[in-house]
Amino acid sequence: MAELTAAALDDLAIQRAKTGDLEALERVYRAYEGTVYTLARRICRTPEEAEETLQETFLEVCRSMKRFRGTGAGSLTAWIKRVAASKALIRIRYEKYRDTEQLEEESGWAGRRDGDVALQMDLESALARLSETSRAVVWLHDVEGYTHEEIAELMGKTVSFSKSQLSRAHARLRKLLGEEDRC
Amino acid sequence: MLMHCTMAELLALRDGEGSTTTRSHIAACAECSAELERLYQRTAALKALSAFSPPRDRWPPVRDALEAEQRQAQRSRLRWVGLAAAAAIVGVIGFQAIPTAAPAQDLATREVEALVEESQELEQLLASFQRPGRVVNGMTAAAVADLEDRIAAVDFGITRAQEVAVSTDAMADLWRERVVLMDRLVSTHVQQVTYVGQ
Image (cartoon, rainbow over all chains, first blue to last red; front, side, top):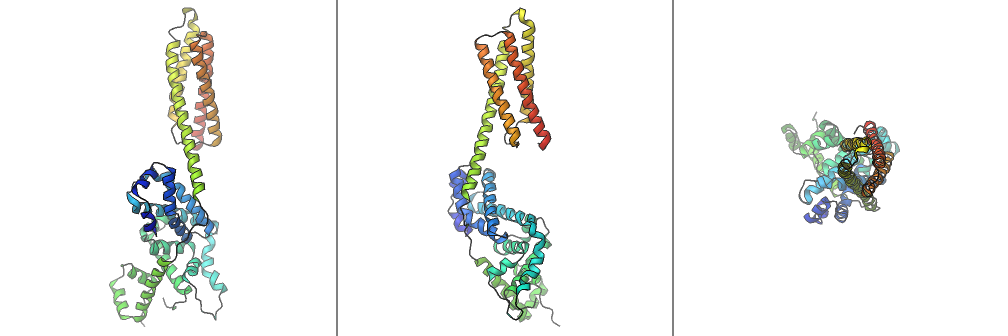
């Protein structure tokens, strides 16, 4: 998806955007709004927060565009996604309900399920059941291709934390998806 | 009893970091091998999840904020140009005003000379506080803008006074007013720096 949208932006548009040209900056926005919003939706708790993250991301991107040293759409994609991930992670880090997510993950779904009914749901719903931190790590690592070192840096945590969150996320997904209970 | 792989070990294997022991176990254990396959499938399914589209266009608020910032930056640049022009006027008029004074007006002339010098010192001091892009709060910005407007008006008065050759006393009054306003402008910047630590 990112590659397709990035291809719509030529180097000239990127150079113009670097000068603060609003039309060129809008082209950058149009090329990446879906990418950024999807990333934000996967990390943030609500669609509204994802929208705010989208707006915050592009405000920063547009303000900092002149300092962007990369060449071509590929590096621009990586930079914009990094800004978006950072904004989304800051948001979940400081949300007031962060202290309750552990409880929510452990008891929220389990408390409602019928013991006789197989616990199975689609991946989209299962992903939404993860804690924000676990969901962020599994998305950034498995889908966006960030390394544990990069995730640790973005989250201000250790590499071990990132690895354990990924492991935890997959164990939880596996359970929610009704796969065999072994690991 | 056979120990199966943990999720962490399976993830390490998937990411090309698995140990030899884990690899050997996977090769021999159908259950763990199937688990690894499910992990691959789950990862592929995550990557295949559909993208979202933002429900509302968020470009207009971004554009509005950028335009407001550009206008603010432009105003700031114009103020700098205005101040630079004022500083130039201080130099030129000050230089012209002093030698043309009559001997009987020595006292007033010396006062003008001192006021011009003081004004120049305040200009230099002001320049050390001002830099483009420095954050100021709204109240300070309004106070600064007001003082700069008043200084510009005094500078205009000095220019006119020079053209019509007003008395040295009248010229001293104008320079005195300029120094007072410049002093207030510097104080405003000092307070801002002290308050926000910039």
